[in-house]
Image 1 (cartoon, rainbow, N blue to C red):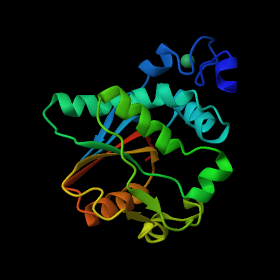
Image 2: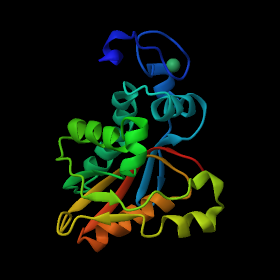
Image 3: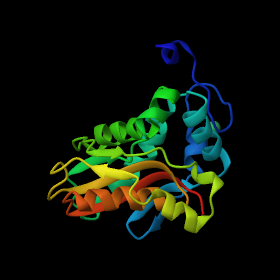
Image 4: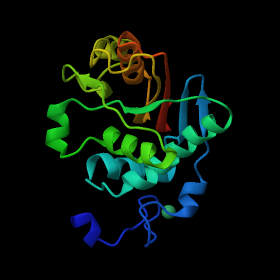
Length: 197
Ligand SMILES: [Zn+2]
């Protein structure tokens, strides 16, 4: 409601008119790491945009950032990759409640809409993990293991486009993908806004 009343400004460069302007979007260079794809490296205007999206309540950015992720999904589909559903790597419900929204869920909804795939949410975070930023790489992987569970049968036989905002070590996405495969998913491909290597 409030979003609609506020005139959008580019999160990257403050230009009025859009939540992320064309110039800033043009700076995005997609990255592929096996089954993981990012719309860009984590930096520059995208770093600011993601920060505003996650921490400053600027939900309007879901459309722009989701559009960048959708372009990655669409490129895969164009080269013959078959996907059945879009699934968000959801936040823990407690954290989503505090923030007021779940940024992965907003992104996934936007991707599903743009690429014309059904949106499903079979994943659940089963405990609030220690904030990953406080841990080194090995500890992050251990911290995240078993952090997700998939609703029984909900992913069975499906080829999933798993969506999140940022991949750092990939521990979160690996845990989510593992839960989906445990839930019977046939294939899981991961798509994020930014890769922070
Ligand atoms: Zn801009």
